[in-house]
Image (cartoon, rainbow, N blue to C red):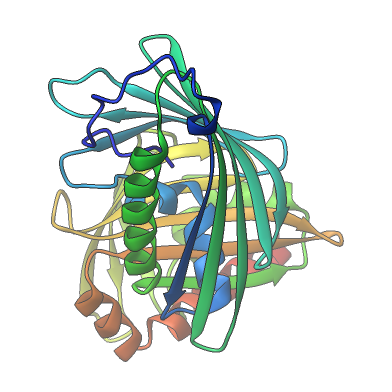
Length: 308
């Protein structure tokens, strides 16, 4: 998470006064979402891309994203008329729904501006959760405390809003990860199982790779046709897929989505997440049974894999 590049940068000093170099910042947010959902919103690369920009004037471009211990995330924070700010995040500890620890290094025009250790602690139950973030900051090129306070504060507000319109579905499939991944990322097999019970898919175009797309109709048991368009972002083999859901070919976006695949005692844990574009769309989806229908889809995936 980068500092806010819109904040004043007039306080450029040599930081001779050592007390200005170090700061410990704390942030807390209560979120109207289950703990498992908040964790996914915090860690899933596709979700982080949704809420990372602190203000609408800032664009965040992700160059690399791997949320695992030893993995890193590299992004460019862009504001028109200003130099790009590079943010490198390295994941040091990930205890699901409990704690994450990462380092963060900020640089611009080849000059390192700051380094920080970020610890996030999670708690909660049922439909509410809590996030407490501690940032141990070392400013190097200038005093970065004010920018960090603004950037982290705005980013966490965005995170809370995104988590409250996020749906997360999980299923442990009794098959090796390579088989589950192969069933998902194969243009011949994906249309055979995708969708809730009784639904079928009619494909127009399918290209399952980063930068690819799937244009198709989902057909309900009563014959109702639902046009769909999936646009694929980052694809990490046998680890994760990030994609955008559109209402029909090149239609309006209704969700940013991801699927992740983890080994689980010889089986595969599949997590499917969706951040709906608006709170109203999220509530509408919950109302028509999207959770149950999504779990049916993952159930069809398991049955398909076992049948193969």
